[in-house]
Length: 215
Image (cartoon, rainbow, N blue to C red; front, side):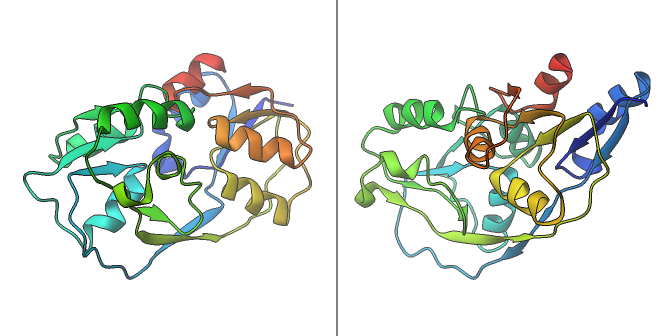
């Protein structure tokens, strides 16, 4: 049987991985098992810094809010930074290891100092950044919600899970996977292991380029 890989991202998000699999005769199954819906929100407080934990959070936030010229922007990692820069958004803080959000949170806290930050998030956010900051310094509007969209996935040699919610959605329609399990960062790793499933590899930067090197 040819080697097969499942990743819980849409094929449009992993073009480089698709090319790698084609070149190496690997069958790639790429499906996000979750979908997202906007949540009405208002921001009435003032803030100095906007922290973006994902390009999705930015997209839903920017549908309602405009970034003021004086606002300083920080983000979780280089992949998100690159996508934001394509939109013409200047980034002042970039987390070094987006796969380890606790490490990013600690670094961001030092960089933030006494400034106030706004962190747009989903309804199931782990609040890794906000949990390290005083409530008076942190504004955390819910700008979108995550909804399960489970599908039956063919048996694969390798499974790459990109978020805890994708893990939960997978298990709604599929038996626990038996192949090699790759976690898209520490948060996803812990969630998978809490289900009694062994993780073989954990991405530290949570980037497709890092994944390809490991494959």
